[in-house]
Image (cartoon, rainbow, N blue to C red):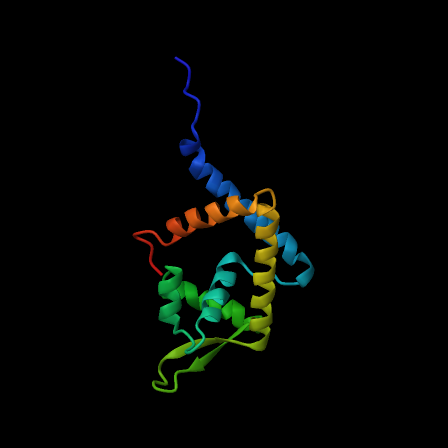
Length: 151
C-alpha cells in the first residue's frame, strides 16, 4: 500500500521550522558587516530589556520572560555585560535586587539587530503581495497571541 501524499497541514510543522531557520540565516547575513556576534538567546534578552522602558527588569523577570532557569539568565547577562551591551544596577528601592539595563552600546546593538531582522523579513516576504502579507500577518498574530501563550 503506497504512503499517502503529505498535505499542507502535515507539512506545516516542517515548513515553520524551515522558515525560522531561513529567517535566522538571512538575519545573520544582514548582520555580517556589523561585527556583532550575539547568540539568539542573547539577542532575545537584549530585546526584552529594550522593551522595558520605565523600569529595568530584574534577573527573575528575565528568566520568566525567557522561560529559563535564573542561572541561564546569569550566563547570558555575564556575556552581554562583558560585551558592554548591558550593566547590572542596584534597585533604588531594594539594594538586594539587581536590575539589568541597556548601555549605549546595547542600544546601538539592539538597533542594528532590529534593522537586520527587518531586512531579513523583507527579503523573505518579498515574493508576497501586500494583500498576502496582510493575511499572513493576521494569521501569525492569531498564532502568537492565541490561548496558552504567555507574554
